[in-house]
Image 1 (cartoon, helix red, strand yellow):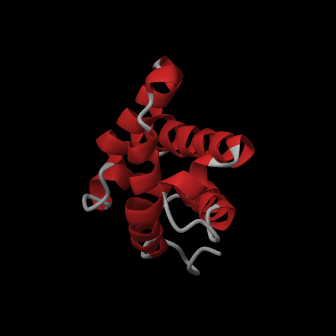
Image 2 (tube, helix red, strand yellow):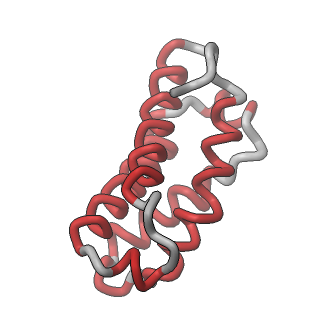
Length: 116
């Protein structure tokens, strides 16, 4: 892996960790939505993850990490950017609680040393 990809993966992991930290005390969607600041911070970080995944990682890295759903990651970013008012918060919440911990675990396999 080249150093650029290493840096991008580290940034993605930092964004993931930020979202997980923002939501560590949330038990459900309703509690997540109680704070517009938390929602906005999480949505911003999800957009950053998608943008980095699409435009900053090399195709070689994406090919190596085939278990990671790169297109879906960027797809969520597109849904947020192009239709924020129409973004389904349940999808955002499910992504945070179900997908991000797994994504972080997968990305850490490519870290040397493991991220965070």
